[in-house]
Structures are given as structure tokens and as C-alpha cells.
Length: 386
Image (tube, one colour):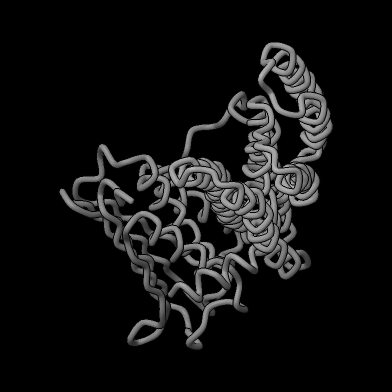
């Protein structure tokens, strides 16, 4: 387990899109330099005052690049301090430096926050050098333990912030994916219904244009109407995407609008090219959760569209919606000839199943005994809590 954790850390890539130097970074440098100057002047007991001041001022200028070059900046800063530590050991001088150099912990935080796994390991190795030199210099064990604890705290905070941002980014990516899937379903469910009607009427008009020109004219009127509806719904969706929360959206269609599917199919069929759609609403269908109400309509609409498009020689498509205190049931059946599959592998049935699953329900589709096709869906009345 520990070995897997180490390998995972070692392969961890850098955090994406680290920001470069910004005005606030230079302000931080100015504060660090000013604090070092004040401390050097105010503490006469500081050993190697000039060296300590120059060292802190020099490493302060690594701060603006701590995100884009985290390990390099840590190497420069802690390497400088380690070099002075070695010189102090050789000269037998107890050198502690300036307390204002505490900003070096920010470099350790940045290595853990922005660096790759290898850079995090390298940063820990770098900081271990000054700690070892301090131990060699005879520092009390309590000081060493306290210093190591502060170092590990800075690293832990950097790791925590890193994974918090990663988790947030994953959540946002998941939300965008769900939005794209929902948009794909909405486009398929709404536009495909109207386009299917347009295709049916175009076929009927072409077939009857020579023998019954008045029916062909009626088919053209239906095509015009369906095209207008499609454009209107497309404009609504595009407006919602462009304007966000300020978009003026039309009311979501629901169970009460399913009966319109029968009227639309009748109006769309002046030449009897499409099957008759019969709708039956029964049971308690009031006070449904909006998501469930809309889902039942979309499932019925898609099932009817599939039947009109794919059922061969179908005369009737029966839509039945029944609700009770716990769930809503939808069945859509046609009496056409079934070949065991419905459509050339499109996204309709997949989208229908996903829509039902999201709400905690189920959807099944397949050939009926005796011919035809059946779609059956069951949705919890108030939707899934998840």
C-alpha cells in the first residue's frame, strides 16, 4: 500500500496553469525586504548581520516565480541558506539568520501546491539539508522537531489546497459533461421529433404530388409549421446558452402536453403516411416533480418519434401514462413490423435510458410478442434523491 502511494506521488504531474509573477508578488517581495532591513537594524545581536540581510533580500526575489518554477526557486533559496550554514559550521559560529526569512515556508508550500510529484520529493530532500546542518551544529532536539513540524505543515497545506482544487476542477468537469449530455438529449428529443415529422410529410408529399396535389400542398404546410417550431426551439436553446440565467425560457413541457402528440401526429398526417397516435392518461398525475414531469413527456415524445420513423406498416401507436402515490409508468406500443432493432444505432434509446436512470427509474425497449415494438418506463414519483 505504501509502495503504491509512493509510486502514485512520483508520477503525479504538475498542477495545470500555474500563474506567473503578478503585482502582488512584487508587493510581497517589498514587504519581505523591508522586514529584513528593519530586523537587521533592530537586532544588534544578529550574527553576521550583513550576510544575513543580503541572504534574505536575495532569496526574497525568488517569490514571484514560486508557482511556475517551484523546485528551482526552492533550490536557490534553501541552497543559499545551506551554504551559509556550512560556512558557519566551518567558522565555528552559531548563525541563526533573520526571523523575517520565514517566508521561505511559502516556497515549500508552492512546491507541494504546484510542483510535480518528483518536485515535491526533491523539495523535501532540499529542506532536509538545512535541518541536518542545524542538527550537526548542536541545536536542541526540541528545536529540530519543531522546525521539521513547521516544514511538514507547510507541505501538507500545499498538498491539501492542491487536491481541493483538483477535486473542484473534476466536479466542474463533471457538471459540464452532464450539461452537455442534457443538452444533447434535449436537442435530440425536441428537434428530432419535428424533423421526423418533416421527413414523413416530405415523403408523403412526393408520393401523392401527381395523383393528389391538394394533399401535397397540405404536406408542405405541415412541413413549414414543423420547421418553424424547430427553429423556435433551437433559438430558445441558443438563447439560453448565450444569456445564461437572463434567458427568457419557455415553460417546460410535461405529462399534460403528451395528448398534444396525438393531435400533432394527426395534423402531420394528411396523407395517412404516419400511424394514428392514441394517448391515455390515468391515475394520479398531478403534483409531479418538474424533472419527472418533463422526463415523462420527453420519453413519450422520443418513443412516438421512433415509432413514426421506424415502425413498418404501423397503424396505431398507443401511449399510456399511469401514476400512483409512488411512481409513474409509461408505455408506448405500436403494431408495426419489428425486426428486433429500432433505428440505425442512434442515441435515442441510450438517451432515454440515461434520462430514466438519472431520476432513479428504469426504461426497457424491445419487440412485442405478436409484432410491433414496446417502450416501458417506470419513474419514482418524486424523482431520485441522488
